[in-house]
Amino acid sequence: MTYEYDYLIIGSGIAGMSFALKVAETGRVALLCKTSLEEANTALAQGGIASVTNLEIDNFEKHIHDTMVAGDWLSDPKSVEKVVCNAPEQIEELLNWGVDFDRKEDGTFDLHREGGHSEFRILHHADNTGYEIQQSLIQRVRQHSNIDVFDNHFAIEIITQHHLGKIVTRRTTDITCYGAYVLNQATGSVDTFLSKVTLMATGGAGAVYQTTTNPLIATGDGIAMVYRAKGTVKDMEFIQFHPTALFHHGDRPSFLITEAMRGYGAVLRDINGKEFMHKYDSRLSLAPRDIVARAIDNEMKLAGSDHVYLDVTHKDPEETRHHFPNIYKKCLSLGIDITKDYIPVAPAAHYLCGGIAVDYNGESSIKRLYAVGECSCTGLHGGNRLASNSLIEAIVYAEAAANHAKNRIGGYQWRTDVPSWNDEGTRHNEEMVLITQSLKEVNQIMGTYVGIVRSDLRLDRAWNRLDILYEETEKLFKCSKASREICELRNIINVGYLIMRQAKERKESRGLHYTLDYPPTPNKTTD
Ligand code: FAD
Ligand code: SIN
Image (cartoon, rainbow, N blue to C red):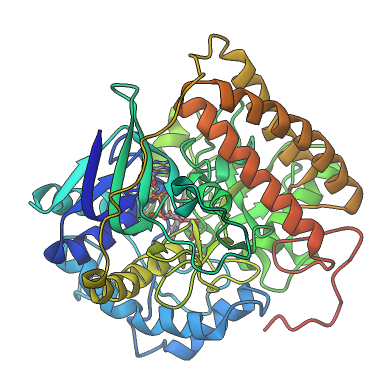
């Protein structure tokens, strides 16, 4: 089956849905998601969304400075300024779309503070901000007559000149995207979606790792698709591990204990109940995430433990339950009363700072293809993302990309010569174990050798092992009918390879990339 749409949007988190709402007046929109509209990283966001709103204490310069410090001065200052200065306008947009942020009795926003922020500037909806945003956007999207939602539709590849029989290499300067091949999981058919403009909004890649806070749909599909189409992908070595995921055997994904809890006064304690952050950073538990995650990792290694503790027992129980109702409920369901008991926590893969390289309009190196949200690399995060800067980045860049695309779309036509998906000579894969076992192996390799602390030796080992899995999986993919499982495995391997390769290329410890072979230089600026 072939569809023709003005805009094809792959992914329906904050990036995909806000872009859809911003362009829908100017054309027909297809919005794809691989499961349901409800399942996305966006829906799990807890802490909130960063924006300067209280001008009595805060200003853009402070938010810019905090972002640059957290990013270890690798962020692109222009991108930082763009996001920070456009944030308040996009908060207004969210409010207009019906998002409800908590307010104090005087009507002003009830602002939280998280690691690396010099001021209280995080807007939130209790401790489930992402769910509130996702639900509000879903409602708006469903009401819009120009937006067609295709759930359970899995994008396999973007369509470029390569599919028209032309040779495309990384040196080709005019690679152009004409749409995507998409697996309809209900029928098993691979359909052709032709578009004038395509947006990649497929989110992150936490599922590359065994321990992650991300929903398991976060397999880096968009990044892998763009890389295979010879687009530019960068900064993949900067994987953010959240310091405080709830430690509970067998949970995948891990439940997050928001950083806002440390902003509220919770302190980290080692396995014996002793505070330890003073050994690592003067900002203690509110140091940026890379520092806190490494400190926890070190404490766990020293003690031979698989977790440390977060202690909020000294705070007023009523207030704790009020600010963190979902965390309270979740922990209680596991027998942990957070107003009385320490919370067992450990770091987990949480966020990908790198991704599809884009310019200030959100346009990728491939023409007619934009990328917004966690799958993109705008330069905002540099070596490490400042807490709660992700949701705001997504919506600010959705605005930029929408404005740019709306201006350009009049000059684009659908390609009429795109062939259908070719699955000649393929058959249904009868042995799911070939996929599930390889997936476990990739997760283990990445966690063991390409985690919080790396070294040349570990990266080399990972590389050699991943190479075997790559060869086996490509062979299996070529002879199998398309399925979500084989495509995700292939994407996870591609993304793992990119993380490893770019980690090998960075010969320094910087931001989230920490390697024993190139220890950090002692007098680097931290404030
Ligand atoms: P997502 O929201 O992840 O959406 C991705 C979409 O792409 C999904 O709809 C999925 O179905 C679709 N998709 C993927 N692959 C395919 C494919 N092949 N075909 C079709 N569809 C596909 N950030 C903050 O700023 N503040 C926070 O408080 C915060 N808390 C967080 C808490 C948790 C537990 C987690 C996991 C993340 C948190 N983050 C937070 C990060 C933030 O939530 C994400 O970076 C952000 O939501 C990403 O939005 P997105 O639209 O790019 O992607
Ligand atoms: C959290 O609530 O700690 C997560 C915030 C984020 O990832 O930005």
